[in-house]
Image 1 (cartoon, helix red, strand yellow):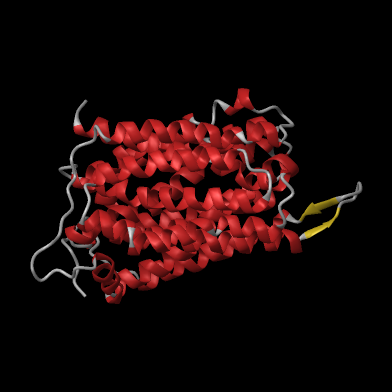
Image 2 (tube, one colour):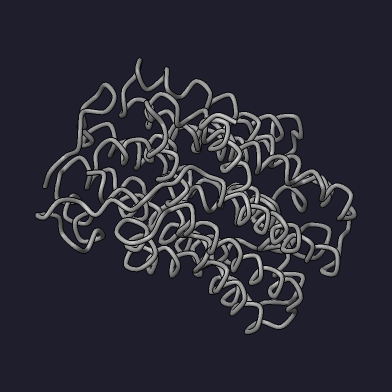
Amino acid sequence: MGAKARLFLMMVLQLAVWGAWAPKLFPYMGMLGFAPWQQSLVGSSWGVAALLGIFFSNQFADRNFAAERFLAASHLLGGLALLFTAFQTTFWPFFAGYLVYSLLYVPTLSVSNSIAFANLSDPAKDFGAVRMGGTVGWMLVSWPFVFLLGAKAGPEQVRSIFVVAAVVSFALAAYSLTLPHTPPKRGGEAADPLAWREAFKLLAVPFVGVLFVVTFIDSVIHNGYFVMADAFLTQRVGIAGNLSMVVLSLGQLAEIVTMFVLGGVLIRLGWKATMVIGVLGHAARFLVFAFLPDSIPAIVAVQLLHGVAYAFFFATVYIFVDAAFPKDVRSSAQGLFNLLILGVGNVGASFLFPHLMGRLTQPAPGGGTAVDYQALFLVPTGMAVVAVVLLALFFRPPEKGPAGPVTA
C-alpha cells in the first residue's frame, strides 16, 4: 500500500478501538448500578490520561522513541487492560482497569496524528482524507453489535463492547509495526529539552490562546453528546438499544464526506470560518434534539450534523496545530489540545451532564420519572453560541492555510 493508504488504515483501527465502547459506556455503568459520582469518576479517566500524556507519553514520543513503536506497545497493553475491564462488575476494579486503559490509549490519539502529519507531503490538503479512516472505523465497529446485543441487552451482553475493542487494539498493535518509521525529532541545540514546556509557551500567542479556550468549550459540548445521546435515543425517542449505536454512527457517515472535502473548504474559507461552521453544527443538532424529540426522522437525520461538527472544528484544530507549532514539539502540541478535547472537556462533560440530567429528572405523567431533555439540550446550545462569538471576535490567525510555525 502507498503511504496514504497505510495511514488511512491506521486511523480506521485507531478510532475503532474507541468507537466500540464509547456510545454504550455510560448506559453500561448504569446497568452495573454505578452511582452518578462513580460514573463521573470513570469519565474523568481520560482527563487524567490526557494530562499525564503531555508530560510523559507525548514528551517521550517527541524526544526519545519512534512513534510507530510507541503506538504498538501502547495498544498491546491497552488491549489487555480492556479485557480486564470487560469482566469487572464492581466499581473499583472496573475503574482501575479503565483508568489503565485510558493512560495507555489517550496519548496514542495525538501520536497517530503526528505519524500522519510526518508522513504526508501536504498535511493541510491530505489529512482530512486520511483522518476519514478513523470515521470509517468508528462507523464499521458499531455494526457487530446489531448481532451481539439484543433490543433489551443486559450487562452480560453489553460487556462485549470492551472485548471487541480489545481485539481491534491487538490488531492495531501488530499493524503499527508496519507503519512508516517516524523517529523522534529532538530539535536543535537551542530547543527546550522539555517539548511540553515549549508547546505551553505558545499559548501566550493571542490567537492560539483564544483557540485553546474555544476548544475547551466545544470539547465539553462534543463529549456531552456521548454522555447523553444513547439514553436520549433509547428512553425518549424510543429507538431499540441494539440499533442506537447504528443511528449514532450516521454522524460518522457524514464525517466521511466532510473529511473528504475539508482540505478544499480550508483553502476557500480559511481557519476561522471553517471552525465557526463546525461549532454551529453542534448548536443546530442540540436544538433539534430539544424541540423535535417526537420526530424520529428528524432525530435520525440530524445525526449527520455530528460529522460536520467534528470535521470542521476538531479535525481543523489538529491541522492548525500541525501548521502552527514547530516540528520538534508537535506530538506535545497535539497532546496539549487533546488535553482539552479528550481530557478536560471529557471530565467537564462527565460531571456536568450527569448532574444536569439528575436535576432535570421529573415525575413522568404515566408514572416513574423522565428527564426534561428540552431544558438539558439548551445548555450545550448556549455554550456553542458563546464559542462562536469568541471565535468570530477574537480568533485572528493567518486566514488562508498554513503560514509556518508561530513563535511566542
